[in-house]
Image (tube, rainbow, N blue to C red; front, side):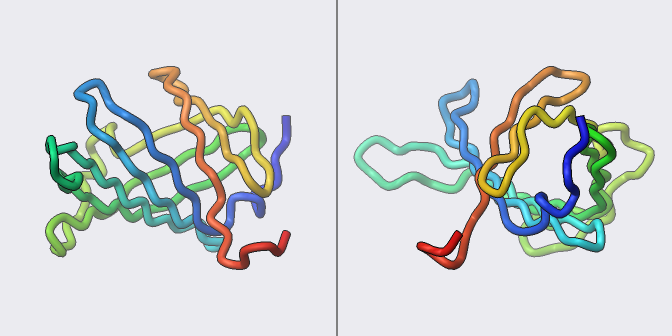
Length: 130
C-alpha cells in the first residue's frame, strides 16, 4: 500500500506503560526536509506523590517513507542538555517499520524486526479546526 509522505509532517504523540509499570511518553516532530526530533520521557509513579521523570532523551536524525515502509536513522542524541553524536556503526540507530494506518489523526506502525506496534496521534495546534 502507498501512503502520502506529507501526512507525516508535523508533531505526533504517544504514551504507553512499559514492562516495569512506568509511563513512556514520546513526542515526535517529523519535518518535510526528512529530519526528525523524537523526545522520550519515562515517568515513575511515586506513591502519594506526582510522577517523577526518570529519564529524558531526545534523538535527532533522518526519516523517510517509501510505500508502506517508514524508516529512521538516529544521528544525534541530547541527554541532560548535552548534544552527543550517535554511533552510526550501531545498528540500534537504524529502524524500519511497516505502516498499518496513516491519516491526518493517527499513525500506526509495526517494527519490522520486533513486531512491536506503536500508535501515534497527531498534535493539532488549532483546536476545532480540521
